[in-house]
Image: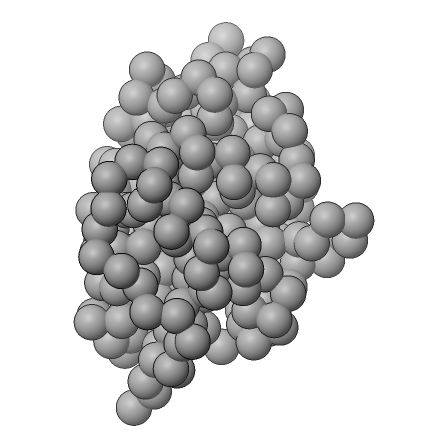
Length: 240
């Protein structure tokens, strides 16, 4: 059974507010090696605690490694954007445990729901109109939309359960590069001073999600395929 590697920094007990966030971000990232099929709850509970305290973590998904943080923590969201060097126009994605949780953060009609049901969990990102549950600072500033997805990855699903809610995410593509990182030790080496945690569950498929814009369906239109990736269009009935 895999165990967490020894970290050079001991995470201190929870502190309040900005002082605690400064403590987290001034340390080296905690490194958690977990089994990809039977992840150790103890390790994921520790990783979730770091996220709950305002940290940014690198985690595996069913497409590639991603940076994640709490949805409702402005400082953490700002830190995530700084690491990726993207601004507020860059679509961030909300990772949800299931379709019922997703529906709390997006406006979904019956047509959209049927399509979502076919694609969750899976390697799809759906663009939908955000509800008031989504802070305005993390939705697209012009369209008021948010990318949402339910990942088909055991480790990430367990982490979401330990966290107790959705996580805001962006693909871990280093600034100035075009391909996501797929090796957890390499992620640790490059970003350990900027992250609170790295969760290592081995290599990911290294294929981006299929991105589908469902907003046109609000006006009776058809969904628009923005990017074809790992999610099958045929499975959604969208193949030509």
